[in-house]
Length: 136
Image (cartoon, rainbow, N blue to C red; front, side, top):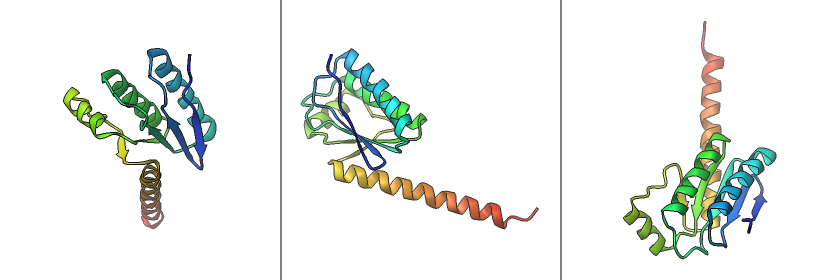
C-alpha cells in the first residue's frame, strides 16, 4: 500500500496527493494526518491535488472527512491545485466540500491559512480586552 507523504512547513502540514486514492490509502492518510496534527501542533493543512486528473465522489468525501478531522484538531484545511475539469466534476456530482477552503496554488493556500490565524488572534485580543475592561 502506498502512503501519501505529509510534509511540515512552519506550522502547516502539506499533503501532496500523487497516487490514485484507494479506500485503504485514504483511511491511512486520515490516520497519518490526524497523528501529525496532534504531534506537531500545526494549525493548517494544505492538500495539493494538482496531480489528480479525476476527483470522484469517493475522493470528494475523503477530502471533506479530512477537513472535518483537521477542524476538530484545530487545523484549517485548504485544497490547492484543483484543475478546472475537477471543479466542474465536483459541481456536477453535487459535492460542495463543506469546511474546505480552496486556493489556486500552495503559496496562496499558505496565505489563506496565515490570514485566518491572524483573524483568530485579533478576535482573541478583542475578547481579552473586553474581559479586562468589564466591571463587575
